[in-house]
Length: 141
Picture (cartoon, rainbow, N blue to C red):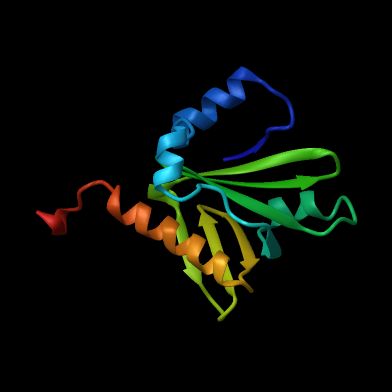
């Protein structure tokens, strides 16, 4: 779900909270050692996100926020802030090249450059949290 989150609208906030849960509490963020990513440079996107990013000449960057039931990938275009809201059950995270991660939700995709160890550590944290808090699978029984 791609949303414009530039304005403080209660309906938009409710959609996000319903999809991925409310933000972590301060204590939970401290236990997780932070829930936000470093600045990520976008290398490739799906067509709907690409059409937003080409509207200005700024560097294409994003950041990722962990929530209890998913992640939010936020980026800016013109003077607007957009969020790609991805619940864990729709999240597909791939490490393609040595320094690139691909984030997918249905038909939306964002590829980001991972050129520092902090970025690799952050994506490992997302995958570990997703695995620890996933719904029970048939094979687990």
